[in-house]
Amino acid sequence: MSSVQHPKVVVIGAGSLFFGRQAIWQMVHSPILNRGTLALVDTDPYRLERMARLAEMVVAHNGVPLALEAANDWRDVLSGADFVVLSFANQTVKYRGIDCALSEKYGIRMCSGDTIGPGGVFRAMREFPNILRCARDIEQLCPDAWVINYINPSAVHGIGLRRYAPKLKSFALCDSLHMPHVKRLYAKRGGVINSDAEFTPEIDAAFDMRIAGVNHFTWMLKAEYAGRDVMPTIADAIRQAAATEGDGGDIGAKALFNNTIGHMLYEVFGYAPVCVAHTKEYLPYFQGLGRLPERVPPLSIWETEERYERHAEMWRQVDGFVSGATSIAEFDRLMGPDHATDVIENMVGNLGKSFYINTANQGAVTNMSDDAFLELLCDIDMDGPRPRPVGEMPRGLRGLQEVVLDTHELTAEAVATCNPVLLRRALLTDPLVNSIADADALIKELLDAEREALPTCWF
Image (cartoon, rainbow, N blue to C red; front, side):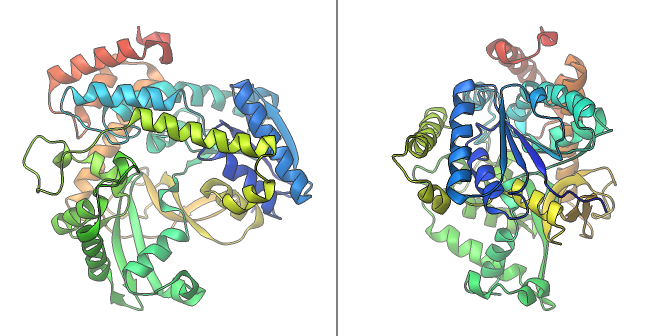
């Protein structure tokens, strides 16, 4: 097994407020990582300057030897990288808002719009060409680095990297199944433990929890504690939570009625969805085209203006740290580890932890192809992820998984080759699209509305 003494981690898209701050925290506080180098990259000079200054202040406050680099061009810092984390996005709030609003005209309601449906396809059209451009530079400047995709649609981009940059070592991540937190949650729901403090290594080992599926469309296929099936107990906990859940308040569309919908899907398929905030968007049942239970309205779509305000509030927080109005000690208290940097720490330190990784199936789900790109519990070190056995994907769920995978595969190929025939085919394979004429009209409208963000080959 290969090893790294002083890892260099390059974060491309350091201005990502859902990753950049946590990456700084973890790189500083991990004794395995804080003798290495953190390189921050962002094309926005103002955002990069603020994040770089924040990193300098956190390093100084904690007195660690972490080296820092900052650049607007990733080529300036890729040399010597051991890990390259891709976390950038092109005006994601704006364009996801456009995707969702235009799709709604054609009966497609997306509460997130970043993975499935027209929103997933067009986000890949905006982001994957830049991912491929970055991959070409990684092949030249640090070909042995692990490339970690953290950009949605995670599965599309993971598939694309494996197919169109096959020389690189890569996998994809999503924080929805961050371990060990997700296993603790279901241990509580299954009546295995009452508090986090009880989740001992012995209980962890006795709790056989198996989750699998395409990213954002994952399901709990087994939950046994010491040989006892606790899936019904988990389902009942979801049912009880559904009875008292509100409308999500100001949390946003992704938070609405998730326990209610999760229990409905459990009753249909016999297995619990574990990423309901996204999974509900993958299914036509909640689009408003047929009758729904009284308590479950059609999906509420992506809330653009609210998202802008959330991002602005996060930047106000960063400004508070950088200006000194808020102490760096408070940053240390408020922030915490992130999924990607947890995985990197585990790989460098050979800690033997397991994580949910988006990678090739390799036989873990026995009735799906080896190259099916799935989110699976993996052992992972510097030699890469190795999925743990899952068993079969149940009928019904397997068919739904294959449709999603076909949509993702077609999307990756369409974007990489800039092929309008494959783009149309991807949309018409997508589980949310109901009409050829509507798909054609929507493609035209989205191309017109997002012209500035798309490669010129589409026009």
